[in-house]
Length: 129
Image (tube, rainbow, N blue to C red; front, side, top):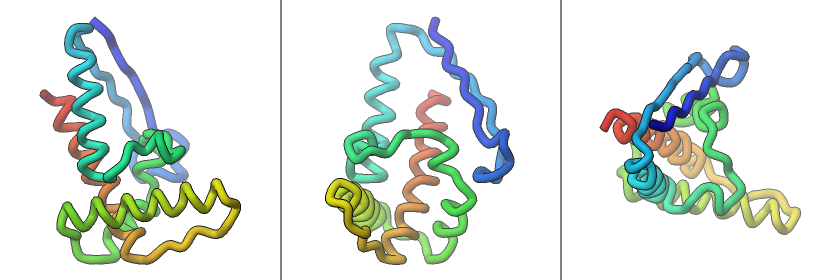
């Protein structure tokens, strides 16, 4: 049995909630878990975030700003949200590589905020299985 324990939000600055979580998983099920999380990542962001230099951490995914941005517009259709999120992270990655200012849109930021929250909800569902 493998155990993953993580905490987030204990600094009371960026995340509006404290989270302490532990997941126990049989070693034989680990690859299925990894594949399910990767599939959820593609489903919500349209790209593997590690490929564009974004680390999957609760503190980064669930900042106060994420909730604020996600609530600034009506919920996007999942496909449109994924496409806008993908464009945003690819633009940010390219801008960082080339040393220029990223061109972002409010729709992209709202969609990305919504995608982050939806992704975390999906990961919790995966973990519950």
